[in-house]
Length: 357
Image 1 (cartoon, rainbow, N blue to C red):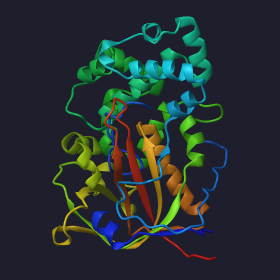
Image 2 (spheres, rainbow, N blue to C red; image 1 turned 30 degrees about the vertical axis):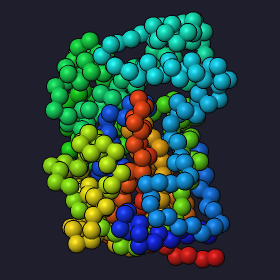
Image 3 (cartoon, rainbow, N blue to C red; image 1 turned 135 degrees about the horizontal axis):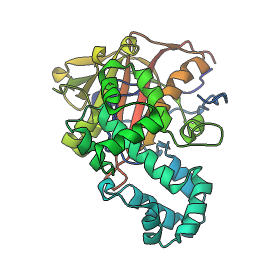
């Protein structure tokens, strides 16, 4: 049973994808880095009381759901620098179509040793990693129904032609580009999330994302009533929001009606709005109540869907009940300004809590 409740005061109520996944808000496809039979661990809670007045300025770092970071941190310091440089090159300018051999040489590692060490560390060869991450970007652009042609997406992601991209999609995922684009409005969030998991980072027993998420901290939080002024967007899309608002995206929150999350994307009333406005400008309110919450730093669509899946599973694990009349809330805590372009999301899932000490 939960023994830690963090109260949010009225100041937070006032202050406070990419691709469609478990939430109806799309994660930014410009974020560039990328079912286990093992029972997930029940997240631990802290026996203390704290208050926050500015949620965007967390003192505690967010949980990093990034396989690359975890793997590189396990290396000796001199190799950390070289592999970090190699990964940076792998995620730069997809259209240049660098080979992994060229990347190894530019990172001051012999191709032979780079291939061996990379494969041992990442559970896939450098070539397989490059192919998988390029497909992640292409699939994100296709599902988001970006106003690009298939050939433009192919060239951006480092494929020589639309036919080359089509062959890769068919070989690795068994689908066509047209099918993926149709998923952006005809599929359900769960169907989309399950599809995206095919591009997860390979682990020993399951994907690395699913292994890492077992340690994701989750806490039960009471929020007073909150509100926001909705943005006038044709299709609520974090990718578009980040491009328009940049760092000011930390003033925004997204909402998804829980009762609509089994619908197709076109039948989900998702909204993104500004919570840093005066109450008299609110055109949407979010009811007070308990929320299961987790702040997660991520750089891939796979990690985004994995984190949300773990949060939903935690409801039952914690002996709680999902509030189907409420909203899944997503807030942007921080946006990277460096080349990684990672995002820290605060995921907040409404629950009906019966608390016992």
